[in-house]
Structure formats: C-alpha cells, structure tokens
Length: 138
Image (cartoon, rainbow, N blue to C red; front, top):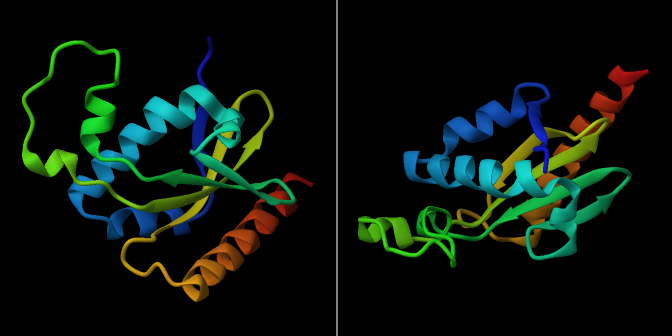
C-alpha cells in the first residue's frame, strides 16, 4: 500500500502548528503519519474525517499519544508517562489532490475553544485558503 504525501499550503498551517504544545505537536505528527498518510481520503469513511464540501475536508484528531504508540494489536505495552494518555481535540483542514497528495491548509485546537462560533470562523478561514490554493492550480 503506497502512502499519501503530505504537503502544506501557505503559512496558516505553520502558525497553527507552532501554537500547539510540544505534546500536541507529537500527537498531530503521529496522526498525520499513522492515519492520514496511510488512509488518505478514506478518513471520511470513519471517525477521522468529514467532508465540508467543494473539496475541503476536516481531519479530526481526538486521541492521545498513547493511542498511536500502542495500536490495539501491538502486543506489549511500551513505557510511557501518564501524560501520553491525555487526549487532544484538534481539527486540521485539508484537501486531497492528484496522485495521493494531501494538502494541509489550516488547523485549530478545538479543546481551547469548542464554541460553534469559533468552529465556523475556522472553517471560513480554511475555505478561503482552500479557494486560494485552487486558484493557484489554474
């Protein structure tokens, strides 16, 4: 099974990523490598993804680092801190393009502010970036 390539469009994703704690960054990195890069657009077949229309998708991370370090069929338990069991609630907005490419646009920490108003604001920002990305393809 070939993996999906993950690319970043613009600076918004980098600003979002730098705003996360080092623990949250580890969880995001693990989710990108162990879920998104493997599943690609199939994330929308389960709990990991949601189509938002017009080619924009939401990658939903609601797991702890421990969930990625020790998948259910991994066998023995590796040493870990109690903190690695702390789940995060992060949303990353992306699109799928060409031959197995995932383009990351934007993200936010939903745990910090779970309000529907914030969610709609973040989706609007992601749509704007997505439209800019699409314009660049022309």
